[in-house]
Length: 383
Ligand code: V1S
Ligand code: CA
Ligand code: ZN
Image (cartoon, rainbow, N blue to C red):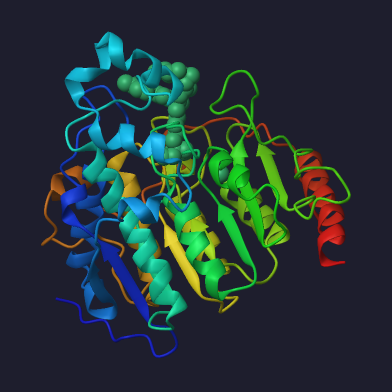
């Protein structure tokens, strides 16, 4: 078994609770918490757990979640049971809080939410107490949840809760979102403050791709007296964006001072819901670039609907964060549990961009226009 030396430069912490993993959204639902089991198995088979401090995540308390969420909503989340959804007395709240096919009510829902949220709050606190430099919670990253509304497989917005913790110690936080979907819940939560700069890269098609928000011109409330003006950066993309143009775009847009990085793996090629064409290494290159800033870094998961590739990406990204990416073998270890999921190639880096070739509908001129527009916007912020 490979022994990985603890990185000298950075202290990396891993925040997880295995009780998140057995939850089921339903047979046909694309969100599979089991992908976290697969990720953990890969990370352990590579021996990366030796290079991190491992913490069992606590459940976030009701009061912690009420830092962002309305109590009415949390009360509903806490008491609703799977059989209740069709009860007439619950109908108003089910509609008001947006439960249904995307956000089903399943067994243990409140426990699932409080555990993934607790992981991100714990991770943020470790950074604030200077007990960690890079804190990872792959079960978090649920960026669509609103103050009093579930949305897009997300119920509690752990990213907002983690960011609120960071704001207690850091004057400013930068939020970067490489999930294929727009990070609307985080953007909306910090829409009116200049202390959080949100940046989301996503597929944008107002009428045909969830959630339909995140146009380039949506940059924060326009009023000159509002401090949040210009503090939302949206990078709307078309289908099939490839490694080279995505990495170049990411580097052009992201400057210094990154803190919260959402690593939704549905921007990989061959994702069940996503429509980009990225390989595991390119997704990881965005993580590696963000790490070069040397700022305290909170890393969370997010989307990702082809579990074998989600776990490949998040294991690879863990190796980048613990500085073991040059040491580990690209062949998946024989010892990994569920190894059959990684066949026939058993590689950490299968050629995803070749396996379901999508036309790259992002022309060079379109991407250059995006970079220019973002740089123009940043001039307002850098002041
Ligand atoms: N794309 C997509 C998609 N697929 C589903 C879905 C499919 C089968 C099911 F049994 C249940 C749901 N829902 C959607 C999207 C939501 C995507 C959320 C992404 C989350 C994240 O990766 O960003 C972060 C974890 N919902 C929709 O497109 C809405 C509908 C418009 C179509 C699907 N039906 C089920 C609801 C309404
Ligand atoms: Ca995104
Ligand atoms: Zn997504």
